[in-house]
Image (tube, rainbow, N blue to C red; front, side, top):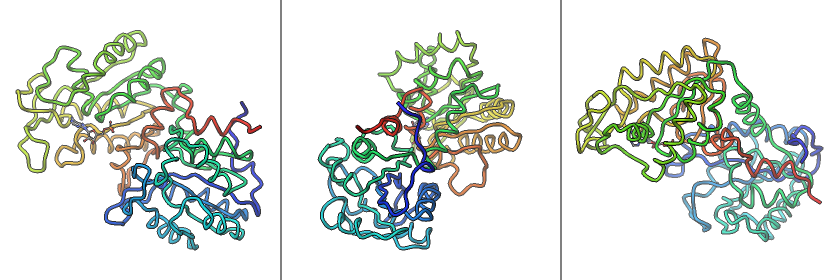
Length: 398
Ligand code: AMP
């Protein structure tokens, strides 16, 4: 396998370049709520335009399930991209077929075409060879800039890359890999990892892989209750992932063997109903009454986590500290975000995984060393796994 080819090494002038981006933006009634993923894709698009490529862009949006869902059309993305680029983005609402083929062949240098949501086609998620072949006909060069989808072996991220000889990673893909790789290569100590959120399945492999490098592991969010449960502490009605409890058992000796300090919350915010204006109170860990559930870390825990973050030279954070969609259960998450910003100012290397956690930074002026566009992709990368959409770029087509 060769090294990951870069977009800079391609000669794209006058060629049709088929590009996979991650334009999976949050939409509300047809309006884009946050266009960060579009803005992060601009360096690659602008470069290809400047170099005289004929640019054919593709992406998925949401989970239409292999069929056309009007609300998940990429039409609003085409419109927003046109504004951001100050250039027309052609869009006809098709993914493959005669019309799209003709438009792609008639593109002039620097012109842009956006295909419809690739997940409208049942062949996308199934990595269908026929669908991949039809996509591959649209370009003579393939560029993948969709880091956030790089853990998916789909037709537009993988199948098509097995068919096109000339291919490379775009600038966002390269930036994500460069930044996240710093954590795998022994970053400046003390190295702290802050994990929260609800899904443990993708986070436990990160703990296992990075344990030899990390000094502190801080656990918040719903993950807390699984750890407390394993320590024999009553968690009331808090969220538990029963099926993964045995995996936590494996984590304790790994942390011990690698001298990792494990910090669990000392106090919690609890409620009897997860909804706006519900009753809530702060209690020490272990005092959750029956019928109540933990929904955020408490003030003492926030203070402790802040101290550790500010003493660290490298911090990686993924997963909210509580049910941050509902105020006031967002306090712990917002405070950790602020501490991350302060640590950045103090010169620490601060990285945050995407998915849910990046929403905390939307519209804020908190600075980080790197805010990843990838949630699942970033976690898999940090678990030490090869992401299929990246490894296929390194494989040569015979
Ligand atoms: P994840 O995708 O695994 O990072 O999980 C994010 C989700 O975890 C968010 O929707 C949060 O509302 C949820 N979450 C965080 N803490 C809790 C908690 N204590 N109880 C229930 N859900 C939580």
